[in-house]
Amino acid sequence: GQQVQQSPASLVLQEGENAELQCNFSSTATRLQWFYQRPGGSLVSLLSNPSGTKHTGRLTSTTVTKERRGSLHISSSQITDSGTYLCAMFSGGSNAKLTFGKGTKLSVKS
Amino acid sequence: NAGVIQTPRHKVTGKGQEATLWCEPISGHSAVFWYRQTIVQGLEFLTYFRNQAPIDDSGMPKERFSAQMPNQSHSTLKIQSTQPQDSAVYLCASSHWGGQDTQYFGPGTRLLVL
Image: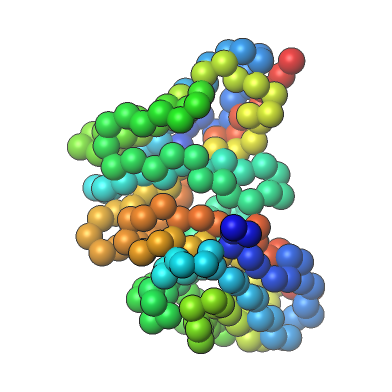
């Protein structure tokens, strides 16, 4: 079935460093959606884009659907960025369900 | 805008009992999704409604699980004869039109089956 692989599984940064989170998927995806989740918290939608690059604040999402990969760049990380980042794919057509990766757990230290 | 509302936030049931989970989508959204999150399996799709009609239930376990959307303002997920392996966080999401529109998630219902 469709699979989404995220790397790294966990990442520890010093405050102010940049983070690069990777997402690879096993079949043709037509759009990726990135989410953020604190332990025990809700899923918060960050960015969603079918291809190319999209920015919001310190976040940049890049999707290359032909190469079955995407990435989320977090610049100047802050302690409050700590949590789990989930990548999810739409697989095209009229299919509306999201297939999720297992996430990247980010810890930002002072 | 209150976002997607889910009740209850926590539910504890005994093995063999029934559990009903409620979801109120964002006002004006026509698509409602149910997902399940566990440590082992991660986030898995269960089912999807659009304009109250069931569209895709490919992720629903064939036995004991059912979902309904009786009106545009709420959906229910019912689990009959709950088993310990049903313990999970059940998440509801909504989007404007379905398809590949951005999905917005509720806080989830944490179900524990003893």
